[in-house]
Image (cartoon, rainbow, N blue to C red):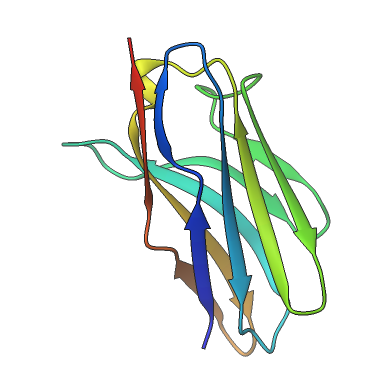
Length: 120
């Protein structure tokens, strides 16, 4: 059973920084991509950043130059990080980690979400 455990959310003032972590474990197959999405109240979930197993990254335009996604692997888990700098009130949302795993089909798993609140 694949598990994604997130941590690192919280309350920060505008201009501050936070680092989110998400540890993925339990997969018998290789993780293709890991990423972060966010959902603000009344809005649809949107992509923030993704990183492939080869290290290629993709960012939403709204976070380019401020957020950095990275990944670390060991024998038992993959951990994806989201370093968020120069935070703005509009970054306030629940942030969700996900991973895509391909065996015979591609399956996407989601974390439980972590709240990020940026005060002005």
